[in-house]
Length: 160
Image (cartoon, rainbow, N blue to C red; front, side):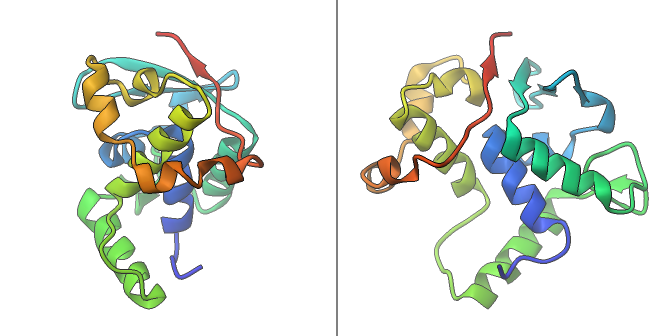
């Protein structure tokens, strides 16, 4: 509620895709077709095809409904938003909300935790080659409450 401009939509796309911040900010309009979002992970260079579920579609539609000034899903004056711009906006939103000790990276951990608690293979979505790396993202304190989030619909993950 305290996030402004494109930040709420960026946070939604981060959560529903589980991708790294730089990967979400690099999403281009052309990366979405036929109900699939194709992300080429910057860290690994590997493609991940993510099925666009209803909530991810809603976030993408909302992002596209604004003034589309570039080829990226999230842009300003025709250029993609920078990591530092989004990070500063998130920090300001947290300050307005009175939330401390959290970062944008916690959204990825939340996605991986929620997926794991629902029995999905979060390693595919995260793009990790080692299951031990994926396990580092799982938050026990969140996992205990994850079952109460039954109304959440996560996007389908398609194998590479």
